[in-house]
Amino acid sequence: MRSQQSTGQLSVYRVPLDEERSAREASNEADLSLISRISTGDRSAFKVLYEKYYDRLLRFICRITGQVDEAQEGVNDVMLVVWQRSSRFRGDSKVSTWILGIAYRKALQLAQKKRRWLDRFKASEISDWNELPNLGSEHTDQTDMQDWLQRGMRQLSPKQRAVVELTYYYGCSYEEIATMLDCPVNTVKTRMFHAREKLRRALSPSKGIESDRGAAD
Image 1 (cartoon, rainbow, N blue to C red):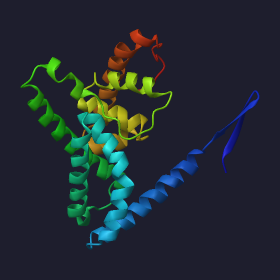
Image 2: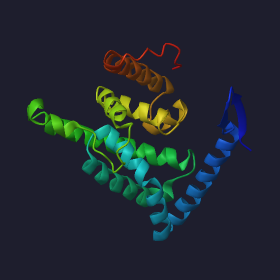
Image 3: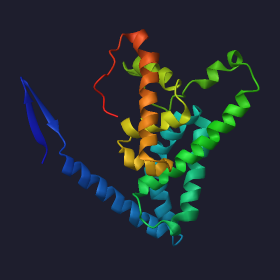
Image 4: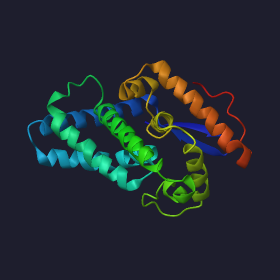
């Protein structure tokens, strides 16, 4: 059951940690079943997994590369790897951790390719191409805030963007992120520290946001 916390006249519902954990475990069990079927060449299982992960992979790769067309190409490449290597998956991590790890490496490759290409031109001539594309979401009152945050994210390196995205949007632990990125946990913490500092410098002056001094690493 959901816990209820009363705050004055408002009642705030929170999802208990054990309920959230159970939901994640159930999702991973479903993914494991799909991976098992995919390893035998089951195309219907692959279609289900592809549709389940498409949006989150598109967002993740797009955050790192800054280009929706490259992100779409990246999603297809990632899922092709999943199809080809499903029989090698041993369950040492969650399926989502494995897939996002593949996506991270692919996104870095695309970002490096883009950087080499952009270096041939003046930044002033292609500045508009660095805008994070709209992925089909409807215009809302939060559009300005999203644009503002995107400007801050562009100040980060691709590796820092990945850590921020995986932590705050996907809810991954540092241990899970370390597995995805194939690096020590302390490296993840260091990237997060520098990412936060860059975001504070980039965003605070324009909006008067107070620094989050109490944020944990």
